Amino acid sequence: MRLDSALAYSDPEAPTFRHYTKDKSFSRAIQHGGSYLLRTYGHPFLSYALECAIQYQKTDLLTNSISNLGSFDALLWLFNERLSLRYRSVMRGIVKKLLVKSPLKHLP
Image (tube, rainbow, N blue to C red; front, side, top):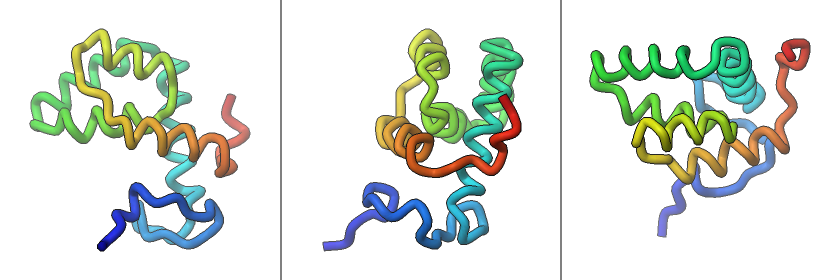
């Protein structure tokens, strides 16, 4: 039986090859940056991102990315837009926020 690596918990400091790097903190930096943009520009920012995703037929990718922010505000926006939540991404995003230190900690 093959275990999907996205579903398996691993040590936050262990190497990974996501986002073209071995360091999981890069993924946490992307998450932190997305959360910063959401706090700064709010729902209009997400609505603009949705327009772009529809144009390029990438709504699944956008939904996954927003779910991964682990933000209640982002999840509420997805619900209001009637987009499906990506529960694995939500859980992965929350765990990442709790266990992996962001290299962008200087941002609010």
